Length: 271
Image: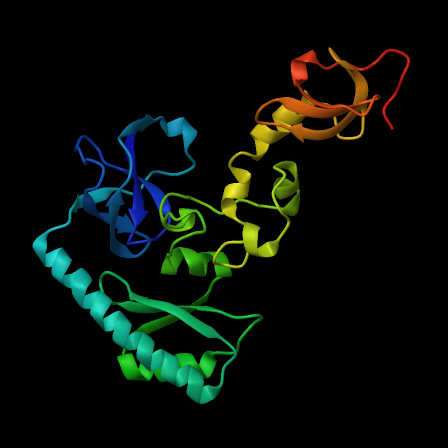
């Protein structure tokens, strides 16, 4: 059995599960964890839960300890030096006129490697750039191309809802979002209204999509003929959340009726 907690890596990294053993790490604790190569840091984001060995493909990496003062000093030093490294890298990119946009830079916790994150429309030949940076910093250099959604997660910001970006706070992974989700929720198909800071469709379009689909199954569609307590007519508008429809009766009168009071008229079919 594993006793695990969820940890957000670094300040805005991905969420990952780590074994915490018998130790208690409250939500909000900053911790040092086992990483792919060496150590890294993050923040505990969940209460402990138990996972059986049969439910996982490989053992969980461990939380090693809470962040100590010397760890804090190293993190601050790494952050300061990464900012300086980013300025150097940006200057080199401009000199070589490479078609890439530098987004961020970070040192590995043990300072053995510097990772530069960038966006680009296609593949970029940055081999000479890597040589320049390696000779300048005397360290392993990794250039990692990311998408615009990852860029938004790394940089953070405020969404159109007035809250911090979901991707920079609690989202674990990016799920597919398509224009059909906006249509099902009757949102204006204006790109400026349904796109996030990354320029892609809002991640939150997916949150209530299944609920809207479920509600739609019990509702008549616009344009169909229905029978209401006030008479027969044609549906002109549907309100999924209120579970009601607007019907234009055969005598020209317009009424709003709860969906449960609407039926198909016998002997007639909607167009």
